[in-house]
Length: 155
Image (cartoon, rainbow, N blue to C red; front, side, top):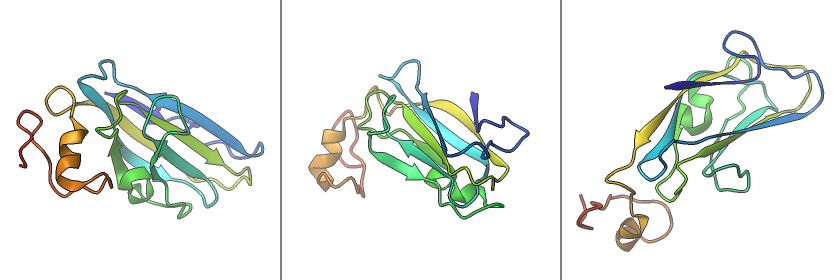
C-alpha cells in the first residue's frame, strides 16, 4: 500500500497563495495485465473553486474523466472526494492507471487537503474482457450485470 497526498503532505494544508496551479500525478500498477489502481480517501477537505479530477488512463488528462470532487468547500467530507471516497481504474483501461489533476484557483482559501491510500487491486481473471459485458448491455458504460470472464455468461 502507498499513500497519496496533496502538496502539503500528511499534516498540512495544500498551497493556494501563489496564483492558479495545477498539479498532475499518475498512479500505475506494476503489473497492468493483472492489476488496476484503487484509491480510497481517508480525508478530503478542498475549498470552493479548487478541484481534484481523476482520469481513467496513464499520463493523460485527455483520458475520460472518471470522477471529480464536488467542491463543497472547507470542511467537506470524504464523500465529496472523487468517486465519493474511492475509485479504481475501469476495465477498459489496459494500463490500470489513474491520472489525477489538482486544480487550485490561487485565492488563498484552502481546506485541510486530502489523504488517500493507494493499492493495486487484482483484475477479475487476468484481464476483464469488456466486450463480453457489452454484448449483454450495450456500449453505454452503464452495466447492470457482469459477464463471467471465462464463459461469457451472466453472473
